[in-house]
Amino acid sequence: MANELLEESLRFGIPHQCAPPGDLAPAVEATLAEFLHAQISVLGGVDPALGRFASKTRDLVLAGGKRLRPTFAYWGWRGVVGPHAPVEPVLPALAALELMHMFALIHDDVMDGSATRRGNPTAQRIFATEHSEAARSGDPDRFGTTSAILLGDLCLVWADQLLARAALCTATLFAARAGYDRMRIEAIAGQYLDVLGETEPAAWSLERALLVARHKTASYTVQRPLQFGLALAGPADADVAAIDEAYNRYGLAVGEAFQLRDDLLGVYGDPLVTGKPAGDDLLTGKPTALLMLAHQLATPAQRAELDGDAACARPVARRAEVIAETGAVAQVEALIQRRVTEGVRALAGAPIHDEAYAALTDLAVTATHRPR
Image (tube, rainbow, N blue to C red):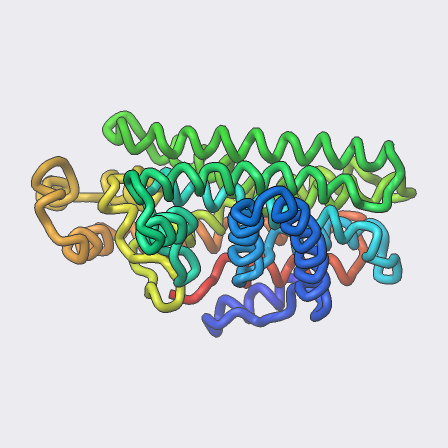
């Protein structure tokens, strides 16, 4: 069944949609809305300006998103507990992953100097615009950047508080917290390597680009949320070690495929669909797996168009054409398909419930074949 789903989805190009149950995303968002309302009220009681500041978190978190991290964590949990266990006790923990994700997005946008996210202004642009419209003294951009960093920090603290509200025994919460902490460390480590790569692209390689993908994206998007869900299940009769290994292999493969798709969308994506400008990675010189492959495959003439000052002088559209001409796009597509297949195979024989097996098989495709 799993292989049939995978083959059918890849053959027709448009992924078959299944993924989470219809009530998961609304339940996560309701949990977030209730929690954030209370936190905003507390800060607003100290000073109205703090309430307005904190409300930006609510606006950004509830503005949309794929809710992938809670979804993977949910199926990691459901794979152990089965289809009938009530989800309410773990909802705060699942929702906490969205606040952690918002922390990462806000800080990532600051580091990249991004103006839009999901088709809307980023946090720093919102604060800078507010500064200008209020005719405050000082530099609006500096105020925007500083405020966005603080807002991201607040999201991370609130994620911790929300996680602690899960109605689970202390031992289970401690085990989940250990995985959650590892996820945060790996995400930050991957982000640093990503930033470092932009400063020394000549020293980078495809292997190192994939290492960044594993830590910056695979870890906290798929791999660790799945294992986080496993930890939330608590003590179980199932072979936890075998499930953990299957989740680990699936998470790395599908998480890398997710980042590789993101690399493609960063160059060739439609901003109306992705919500982000196309070509930003080329403008910053980010040494993604796509660009590293293009360098490996390029002829001397193509490499000259991609490297150094000459490349910077060329339009982004031309550089995107050159990358495609090297065959790198086709190679990345092949890498994505190979990793999706590896991920699905990793689940074969894992002692998880059939519903979770089917959902994770489908998610391997839908999460990595996003439209341009």
